Image (cartoon, rainbow, N blue to C red; front, side, top):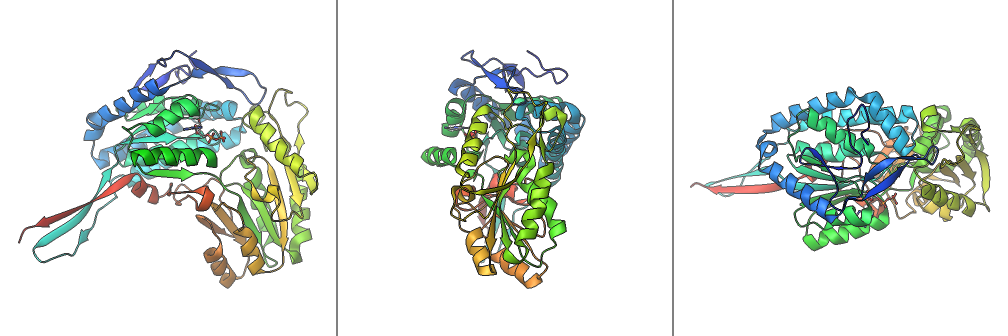
Length: 484
Ligand code: ADP
């Protein structure tokens, strides 16, 4: 099957600039989560396809791609970014059907992908080494060198954004990439490879092998020809990937999600905060690594915040992705089961509001109504575990010290925010909150191309986005010249 007008062949892999059948000849069904129908079949890539993709990437490094200067790579990335924007509607529709996200959110993801390419295109020739004062008679300097072949294992929740931040930065530094998209959602990864190639990306610079995690993903993580792995996904698989990469002694960047808090103090601008408090939890139906799933509220404004959030929840509507409501379905029946399991564990809690699933939502879709729980004990499962669905918990606190203790009291540390008009408290909280990103009087779930992003604890390590990612996707070489 060819998906028009993109001219992509979802039953194949994209290797060395061409559509190729998976060596094993097997395919997997790709589900439309809005109605449970099969959208199309995708390639079930295996270790042999990963071998071919890594070999193609390796050849690209010694070929046309590897010969480009940094400025030429930058210009090409910017051009690919423009080509992405030429396909906004088609890409948005593909993503909406595949992931189940409402069209407006899918459209924002396409624009973000283009913005990553613009950003990393502009940055490609602005990574400089340094000179280092050393012994008399020496000149010492550092060079930034590409890793070589980089492996990218990505999840299904934001395929385009994650391709932008990881493949975009890796290409900017001159690496050649092998991308293993998620088996639940891989159409825009394939479409992107096609667009990039048509815009002039030399063959082999980006190869895409769809397939199962335990097959194609594990083969990519273990491949001895891969020099860096970036992984975004679950904690369990992240641990496996780190162990596997350890066997080959290659660096890994892991982004494994979170349980990110927003802390609302008595003096906060509650009206200004309300849309951030809610959107950060239900955006992409809560299937966002940096979703804010915990809302900590000081007792003086507790009732006011819960009432305001509950009113917003009452208005929320979930329905088919192409109906473009507040929420689409979850990505799969399996994900719905997981989230419903968490909601069931909240039966002892006070569910103060829930949104609606619209009547016209097909029965076969993976819909979950958004749930807001209040007065949740900080140690409760719903306040500790990543749910990855449209569920938020509200937790009361008395003072700043207790707020910090609760906010930092999970195994994760991806994003946090605090809402207060007190400048000194803003600075104290920014230092005290255990997270890779702290927002003050705002919250950036998923956003911020320019802002270094990554976690601590079970949220992972390494930084993507911003300039910082370019250091992660390159290695430092020190040159010491003795000239007398
Ligand atoms: P989720 O549970 O949200 O689907 P996963 O961590 O399972 O998240 O999946 C994220 C990505 O990791 C997907 O591309 C998936 O195919 C891949 N993956 C899953 N298992 C493995 C594995 N054992 N080795 C490598 N990649 C894997």
